[in-house]
Amino acid sequence: MCDRHAIYIHIPFCVKKCAYCDFYSQTCLSLIPDYIQSLEKEITKHSCTDTNISTIYFGGGTPSLLLVKDVENLLQVIDDNFSVSKDVELTFEVNPGTIDRNYLADLKNIGINRLSIGAQSFNDEKLKFLDRIHTAEHAQKAIEDARKAGIDNVNMDLIYGLEFETSSLWINDLNKAIKMDPSHLSCYMLTIEPGTPLGKKYKTKRSKKGRAHPIESTKMSTLFKKTSQLLCESGFEHYEISNFSKGRHHRSKHNSKYWDMTPYFGFGAAAHAYDGKKRSWNYRSIKTYIKDINSGKLPVEDEEMLTLDQQMMEMVMLRLRTLEGLDLEKFQTLFHISFEKKFEDTLKSILKERFGFFNDNRFALTLDGKSHLNGIVEAFAKGIY
Image (cartoon, rainbow, N blue to C red; front, side, top):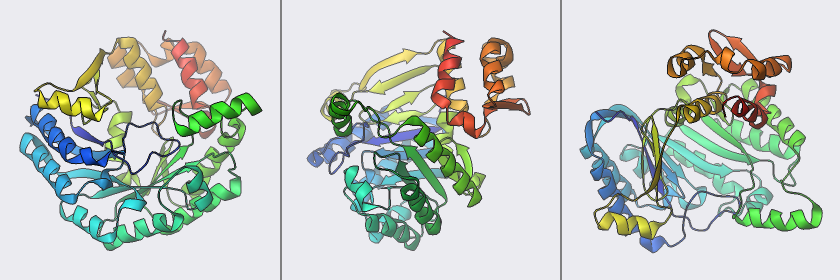
């Protein structure tokens, strides 16, 4: 049996690359028809009708550059080759600059029941800095059009921590989002990735001004905690370090599988997959991906069998991001040692700083602890390797 219950489909096309984005995508849209055909072939090669697919996620890139007919065909191929749950969560990422109400209505008609709108901000200065192709007005209209199209389960992505970010700028973004009443918000700290336009810009700035990050860590930490406090006061549940839902039923079921280390399929160029013990990833090239598929090969660039230490590290790193934290009994069952014994010294330090707590056979981080997540994960890593 194929013990995987989720499918991720990568659509690596964009009108133009955003300054901050490190996800694989290209702007050569003429490749889309051949890419869709290759996706259909790859999905078919992994056919397994004795598994129950409960979430499907179209990510990118910009999935909303696809024709709705192409999306419908992909869903049909999935349905032909897998057992798909009747109440499947079917998420589709959209860029506000590429959609209208008719497009969204057509998506709903073919089964899309959850949208993830890449708003990023409701401030045109911030959007220009990020090199987005849409305006603040487009971002607001996107959620209005989604509702008119009959899609109520809507996530909005927002980014904070730009070099000129102030508390009032960010709070204004959040308040505007709250007024639109989305079912879910994903609020990401801006990170500077090497090789991106923004990464090259900050590399230049670093040599001139000694700065390597948009804002200092203390300011970012303050914005993070203000985000949590404001959204929780507004009826959202802070269930993962960057994610907030209007009640448990509006959590991202698909992304929650990642944080729980649930096996999943990944289809498309640069897509990753996980079978519970092994990770694999496809070539980060559309042309190589298409070439391999057309020659009858799987487009897998490489794979890695995770050691017990790596599985332990992933469990700690992923579960400490979440509201519920790490299940101590599950840890003991998987690794044949108690969490408290394995990390005795690290836990003493975390508890002393009030960065974490034990409750109901679980260990989780406080809000202050989550604002120091990277350092805490590094401390746990030293206890493993």
